[in-house]
Length: 245
Image 1 (cartoon, rainbow, N blue to C red):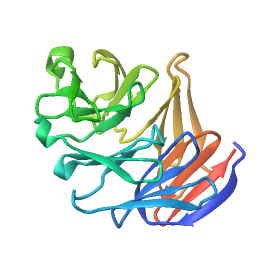
Image 2 (spheres, rainbow, N blue to C red):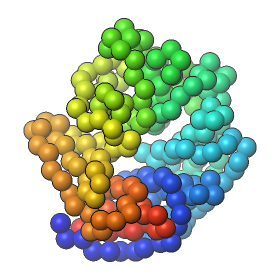
Image 3 (cartoon, rainbow, N blue to C red):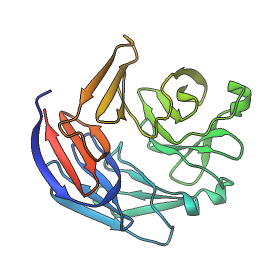
Image 4 (spheres, helix red, strand yellow):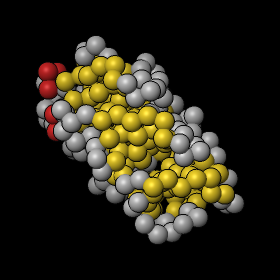
């Protein structure tokens, strides 16, 4: 792979995601969400501390971001300028314990896995539970503890570090499990799954079952990595680096 460094931005961050417009989003050590374009320009910043620590952001739809504050069981919704447009208290819906949620591009709602009753639940933007799966004990015969989720192409991908990446349909019905364990984050793109392994991205083609490794242009201190529309984003201890290829 021929990597060309586009920009390097000094930032101390703990989380990275991207959108299809090549924007990057990082959660900083100051508990802020920062939106950065592919030239390395900081566009917008969102910060508030009334819901505790920000743990996750989903920018699948860059016009309708969702943020997760699990300490207060709260989801915050933002627009493309990172302006707050709404909040949802999962506690008021009876969801007191969760670790993973994600945006649903099918209907602009979001999925959450309720750790107390072991169900996938879809919630709309008016704080209604509009769909819930059966108990995972009934479906699978064992409990799962998702750490990361993403909806893509009519499927919901759920990573459990001890079980692998489980795939469900859009109604929360189990389909199959990919045998990749200890995966804290991944990207599903069409029929491909990407996830970081040390100093490279591992790619798995779900149709052909082909597996390849994509070596990073830098091999030290890479905390997180993502690919988006011929861009590679590397989050390091003190910087975000963006490459094209």
